[in-house]
Amino acid sequence: MVDFADVLLESQLGGGGGDRMEMSAVLLTPLFILLLFLALWGGSAGWAVSDAQRRGQSGGLLFLLLWVCGPFAAVIWYFVRPRTTLIERAFDDYDNEGDGLEAASRLEQLGDWDAAVLLYERVAEKWPENKHYVDECVKVIREKQSRT
Image 1 (cartoon, one colour):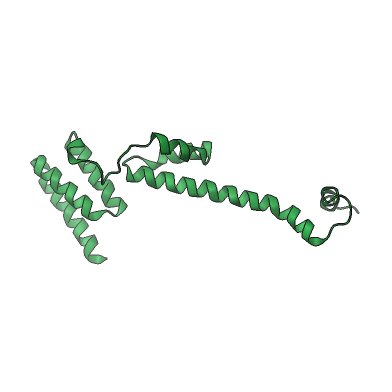
Image 2: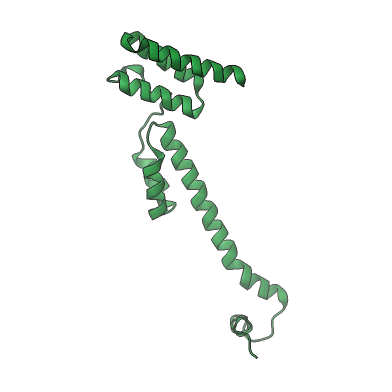
Protein backbone atom coordinates (compact mmCIF):
# COMPACT_ATOMS: atom_id res chain seq x y z
CA MET A 1 0.00 0.00 0.00
CA VAL A 2 1.37 3.45 -0.94
CA ASP A 3 1.46 6.07 1.81
CA PHE A 4 0.38 9.53 0.65
CA ALA A 5 2.94 11.28 2.91
CA ASP A 6 5.78 9.25 1.37
CA VAL A 7 4.63 10.14 -2.14
CA LEU A 8 4.36 13.84 -1.19
CA LEU A 9 7.79 13.86 0.42
CA GLU A 10 9.33 12.07 -2.54
CA SER A 11 7.84 14.59 -4.96
CA GLN A 12 9.08 17.53 -2.85
CA LEU A 13 12.55 16.06 -2.49
CA GLY A 14 12.90 15.42 -6.19
CA GLY A 15 12.23 11.70 -6.15
CA GLY A 16 15.85 10.93 -5.50
CA GLY A 17 15.20 9.06 -2.27
CA GLY A 18 16.61 11.92 -0.15
CA ASP A 19 18.03 11.28 3.25
CA ARG A 20 16.27 11.75 6.58
CA MET A 21 17.70 15.26 7.11
CA GLU A 22 15.96 16.52 3.99
CA MET A 23 12.70 14.88 5.04
CA SER A 24 12.96 16.42 8.51
CA ALA A 25 13.59 19.85 7.03
CA VAL A 26 10.54 19.52 4.79
CA LEU A 27 8.37 18.50 7.74
CA LEU A 28 9.75 20.97 10.30
CA THR A 29 9.79 24.12 8.18
CA PRO A 30 5.98 24.65 8.26
CA LEU A 31 5.96 23.88 11.98
CA PHE A 32 8.74 26.41 12.58
CA ILE A 33 6.88 29.06 10.57
CA LEU A 34 3.69 28.39 12.52
CA LEU A 35 5.48 28.65 15.87
CA LEU A 36 7.20 31.85 14.77
CA PHE A 37 3.86 33.38 13.75
CA LEU A 38 2.24 32.34 17.05
CA ALA A 39 5.13 33.86 19.02
CA LEU A 40 4.84 37.09 17.03
CA TRP A 41 1.08 37.22 17.49
CA GLY A 42 1.26 36.42 21.22
CA GLY A 43 4.06 38.89 21.86
CA SER A 44 2.36 41.72 20.02
CA ALA A 45 -0.96 40.97 21.74
CA GLY A 46 0.68 40.93 25.16
CA TRP A 47 2.51 44.19 24.56
CA ALA A 48 -0.48 46.02 23.07
CA VAL A 49 -2.97 44.98 25.76
CA SER A 50 -0.61 45.83 28.64
CA ASP A 51 0.27 49.15 26.97
CA ALA A 52 -3.41 49.99 26.61
CA GLN A 53 -4.03 49.28 30.28
CA ARG A 54 -1.06 51.44 31.34
CA ARG A 55 -2.55 54.26 29.28
CA GLY A 56 -5.97 53.96 30.92
CA GLN A 57 -7.70 52.19 28.06
CA SER A 58 -9.49 48.87 28.03
CA GLY A 59 -7.40 46.03 26.68
CA GLY A 60 -10.52 44.07 25.67
CA LEU A 61 -11.36 46.00 22.53
CA LEU A 62 -7.75 46.00 21.48
CA PHE A 63 -7.55 42.24 22.04
CA LEU A 64 -10.53 41.76 19.69
CA LEU A 65 -8.79 43.92 17.11
CA LEU A 66 -5.68 41.78 17.52
CA TRP A 67 -7.77 38.66 17.06
CA VAL A 68 -9.09 39.97 13.75
CA CYS A 69 -6.00 41.75 12.39
CA GLY A 70 -3.22 39.80 14.07
CA PRO A 71 0.10 41.48 14.81
CA PHE A 72 -0.73 44.36 12.47
CA ALA A 73 -3.18 45.66 15.07
CA ALA A 74 -0.25 46.27 17.44
CA VAL A 75 1.34 48.50 14.80
CA ILE A 76 -1.94 50.39 14.41
CA TRP A 77 -2.22 50.73 18.20
CA TYR A 78 1.30 52.15 18.38
CA PHE A 79 0.24 55.09 16.18
CA VAL A 80 -3.25 55.78 17.64
CA ARG A 81 -2.59 55.20 21.35
CA PRO A 82 -2.82 58.04 23.89
CA ARG A 83 0.48 59.84 24.30
CA THR A 84 0.71 59.54 28.09
CA THR A 85 0.38 56.70 30.55
CA LEU A 86 -1.73 57.06 33.68
CA ILE A 87 1.35 57.83 35.76
CA GLU A 88 2.51 60.55 33.35
CA ARG A 89 -0.93 62.18 33.18
CA ALA A 90 -1.20 65.53 34.95
CA PHE A 91 -3.74 65.76 37.77
CA ASP A 92 -5.35 68.82 36.15
CA ASP A 93 -6.32 66.64 33.17
CA TYR A 94 -9.01 64.95 35.28
CA ASP A 95 -12.25 66.85 34.72
CA ASN A 96 -14.20 65.26 37.57
CA GLU A 97 -13.75 63.00 40.57
CA GLY A 98 -15.01 59.98 38.63
CA ASP A 99 -12.13 60.19 36.16
CA GLY A 100 -9.59 60.60 38.96
CA LEU A 101 -10.99 57.73 41.03
CA GLU A 102 -11.12 55.45 38.00
CA ALA A 103 -7.52 56.25 37.09
CA ALA A 104 -6.40 55.64 40.69
CA SER A 105 -8.23 52.32 40.70
CA ARG A 106 -6.52 51.27 37.46
CA LEU A 107 -3.14 52.25 38.88
CA GLU A 108 -3.90 50.09 41.89
CA GLN A 109 -4.80 47.14 39.65
CA LEU A 110 -1.57 47.58 37.69
CA GLY A 111 0.43 47.47 40.94
CA ASP A 112 1.49 51.13 40.91
CA TRP A 113 0.35 51.52 44.50
CA ASP A 114 2.30 54.65 45.42
CA ALA A 115 0.99 56.48 42.37
CA ALA A 116 -2.54 55.27 43.14
CA VAL A 117 -2.36 56.53 46.73
CA LEU A 118 -1.06 59.91 45.56
CA LEU A 119 -3.85 60.24 43.01
CA TYR A 120 -6.48 59.16 45.55
CA GLU A 121 -5.22 61.79 47.99
CA ARG A 122 -5.25 64.51 45.31
CA VAL A 123 -8.84 63.57 44.42
CA ALA A 124 -9.83 63.84 48.10
CA GLU A 125 -8.24 67.29 48.33
CA LYS A 126 -9.99 68.62 45.24
CA TRP A 127 -13.34 66.88 45.82
CA PRO A 128 -13.69 66.52 49.64
CA GLU A 129 -17.04 64.70 49.40
CA ASN A 130 -15.06 61.59 48.39
CA LYS A 131 -12.71 61.66 51.39
CA HIS A 132 -14.26 58.69 53.21
CA TYR A 133 -14.15 56.50 50.08
CA VAL A 134 -10.60 57.58 49.33
CA ASP A 135 -9.50 56.82 52.89
CA GLU A 136 -10.87 53.29 52.59
CA CYS A 137 -9.13 52.76 49.24
CA VAL A 138 -5.83 54.02 50.62
CA LYS A 139 -6.23 51.77 53.66
CA VAL A 140 -6.67 48.72 51.40
CA ILE A 141 -3.59 49.66 49.36
CA ARG A 142 -1.49 50.15 52.52
CA GLU A 143 -2.56 46.69 53.70
CA LYS A 144 -1.46 45.22 50.36
CA GLN A 145 1.87 47.00 50.62
CA SER A 146 2.46 45.72 54.14
CA ARG A 147 1.89 42.13 52.98
CA THR A 148 4.55 42.32 50.29
